[in-house]
Image (cartoon, rainbow, N blue to C red):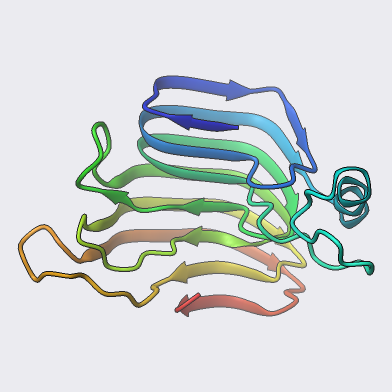
Length: 199
């Protein structure tokens, strides 16, 4: 599900299962409430997609592997509340993508609360990646609260990717500011509990 240029949207009460790519991607929007729903990805479901259509993220790989690029919710928006969501996947559970100052509605991904969620496996409640850009990459005022992870590949994950801008003019570059993780419970991590750095 891809949404751009949206205002005041509510998503609730659904099960999204085995998308061959991101499940929910929100760009340049304002005012989202995503709650009381589930996103579920399994290795075998991804392999079935590949066998039937050859379109899965691991197309033509004949052995079980983690289905990458099966992100749960990727918002690049402002004024977002995500709560009471269960995500089982093998890439970012929630990945806050940066906003940019050339957008029309949300020039910064900001003012988000992600709370009361359960993540099985997954690669984190994530910021980024956020490389510097001419159009300024911006993530600001994001809170992750009361998140329970079971066997995460990564849990707390901030991707501060390097990059280049073609100018040093005002309005280029990037920022990641006012990010809060609180009440995080991590059971049996597969890789890192906390990872901050390049993707």
